[in-house]
Image 1: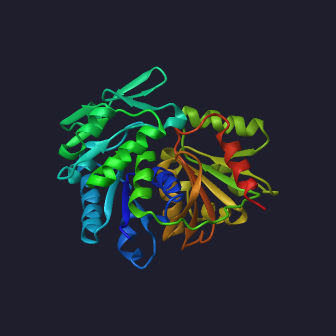
Image 2: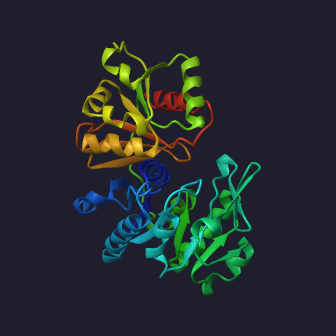
Image 3: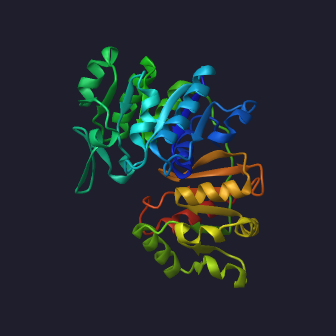
Length: 347
């Protein structure tokens, strides 16, 4: 069996793509600093969180290079997960992979996001992919890509709209050993073709959920307010020690950049009183699992694309169901959907 390793620059993205991949193969999410310690784990798919979204470009490049060297030395196929909004150190993080053919597309059909003529398109907004990756690239429609599959080189940005399109791209990527570069759906399809193993099924059941929300994106604010309207209790981080939790679900919200000193072991241990914890915001998720000293996350699946579900292995939260979500992901009802999904697993 050939293993498949995907590199992600933050934890919510890593757990999101792992949730997609878990439908096809046994998948874990591990921090780059703990990668060498998981050699004995029997996982066909690994997603590595390089925690490089907020560091400088040269450090991001070095972390990715170290992971690429690890994968190459073990004969693992490589994929690269990029942020769905094309944020982060894309230039530096792609540089260690430029000796391979990179196939880039930025499509998530469920969210109406597609790739056309070198642009990411969603609603009325367009983002130039070539400007964001800042590498010489060839833009191709799907027919051109398939017809020229054997002779590709460098970076190729491919049009796609549907899961059928992504499947066709994945078949070419897998056949010729190219590197898939996307927010997750393409990498997940390549993992299925590469590994071809049966996933290990888990039941991620939760009757109570602690939502730890460090994102202050306007999308997140709307999601929190909708959850409050639906009856979920919402408190600020500085009120945690003065709050009596009487059961049920709870949202703790804060501004991570402002309140980072208050994010500590006390908050992590509070999660032990809940069946599951949801972390909103990539840096928030990184910090919580770092404080918990988690070894890795064993992926279970996803609520929706890029809303991954897993089980924490090792540390203070060992065995805890965890859900992660980026601040940009989901509509106003997403917290309610997460809660209802987890309750629906209790049977």
